Amino acid sequence: MALAAVAATAQEKPEEPWQYVDAQDLRIINKGWDNTARPYTRIPAYLEDSVRETLWERSQCSSGIGVRFATDSKRIGVKYRLLWDTHLIHMADTGLKGTDLYILEGDSAWRHVNTNRPYVNNKEEKLCEFTYVSNLDGKMHEYLVDLPLYDGVEELWIKIDSGATITTGRPDLIDPNTKIIAYGTSILQGGCASRPGMVATNILSRELNCEVVNIGISGEGKLDQCMARAMAQIEDADMFLLDPVPNCTEMMCDTLTYDFVKILRDARPDVPVVIVEGPMYPYSRYDSYFGNYLPRKNAALRRNYERLAAERPEGIYYVTCDNLDGVEDDGTVDGIHLTDLGFRHYADKLRPILAEILARHKH
Image (cartoon, rainbow, N blue to C red):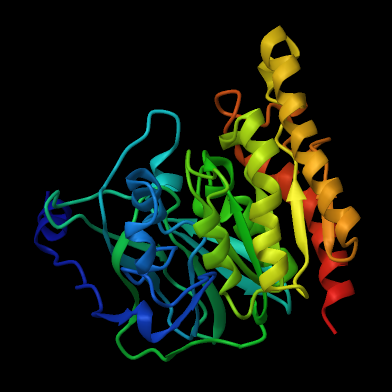
């Protein structure tokens, strides 16, 4: 009883105070434009009046955007305000509206530390707060936080010990001098990764050590010419990666591909364009309609690629859908959108191809 009385009256040690650092004072990576409506949205503000309402809304998701920093803090966490606090029935909230923390081991290996469980305490304020890790060694380490894939972020703070140092980190990590602009659909955006770090563009960014701008817009990767013109204005683009087929009909693949790519090539003749076929969904092996229709879409895409390559063969590349998303190995959630396994297949196929093209065109 005496021991119980002592335990009941003992006071817990109060938590040490946090220092909250606005991510805007650190290094934001994987953004294509500075003139966005909000700090963590993905297309220029001027496009709001030029695109469909659904395209604009889904472009407000923060997919692919990250925060780079270095700190000697023994604790690291995050606090952020969501735009919508949305939910999908086929995607984990950790990927939808959570955040990842990665740490650099050695000179080039990014390792996953933890993922934010996006619990919103106040539905009006839409604030999430989470501590990724405590009891670190107090040495300076390089970190990366990936933002939500299918929700927007209004504000974001990195939280560290009150007396800790924080910087924007080594500039050669996620090299700002190499930038891939990736355009596509919900699959490219990140549906349905279990956490933000597993979307293909973020895997490629870490493993190619470059910025990969995610312009995957769910249901809206329909080869709109205004999107091509905006992408062509990204002055530091080193590659355009195009993966729009899942959102396009056969006719769209046949009639829109040429003009979309030509806008990019005419405006930026020295920037290579990589065109990716649409995947063969698992059910297309058994559904005779899709088994016939999906290859026809890719055939239309390829005809336009061949036309563009005949006009000017240098700087244009074509990637087939063979082994692209690992559908033979349970690579999808719902027959279309990818699991983490599917994203790993996608990234593993593209990584050596993109690395070779970048080496060829970067001097």
